[in-house]
Length: 328
Image (cartoon, rainbow, N blue to C red; front, side, top):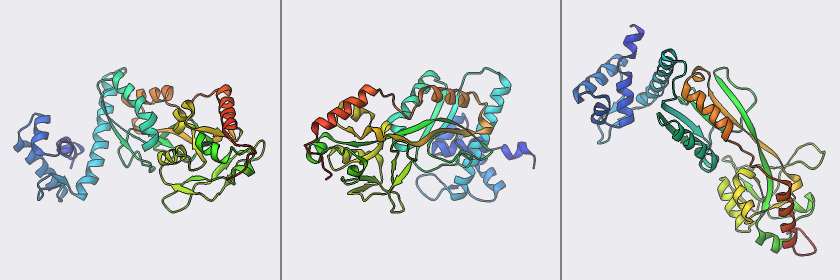
């Protein structure tokens, strides 16, 4: 079988899967229902297995169909990118653009940058997913991935760009400080109620401590409350239930409006890195190149801060603290 024969029916199959019905796919492709049905039947005959479950009221892909769909989307996207590159060196970005980003950081920050990009390039159709797992851009057919964390070693099939590191600070609510005092030393901090991030395996993330010239240390503490979601941690801190070490991108607004204050700001340290990751085979596609450049200019994980703001936060925490300061 020739490569051209293998490609027959792929576009129709993807259209049916995306539309969820033969009729909607026929309208999208400007074909008859019969033509779409015959195309899928020929494809299933060639593959010798069904791609859709027709026994339910709603058209759903079989397990084989789901696997084949990911491959087809990747192949068609790469063909489209190749055709556009050959057609014109400076063609405007267009077409479907699959992007994955972390759930919380994506919702709070990255999606705004992406929507501005979509407004700038109306011919681009973003398809955005939000997940905190480490996705595989090649396996999942993704064009660009926004990722927090990851190793310094990347597969040869991927390209990446480092956009900076988180800044981690200890935070508490003014109400907590008023009741329990603001710790003046690291030793005092470790005696306060801690709100920790809990992992799925039951463990907790340690606090990262950078005390002066000492090496970065991972400090395991007993948590009063353990939460497996970053925004839930922020809520617990806002309610005055304890102190947490949080990324500044997560609590930027609360620190500005005073609903949270920094605790021992001199202990601020770097956290996880922010990366853009994309498939090497797609890096010359105009839509991918344009989005990477846009993210590189507009996306940051460390909000701008001033010494004056940090000093003000420290003074506010001190003013709220009862005297003498003592751990809870």
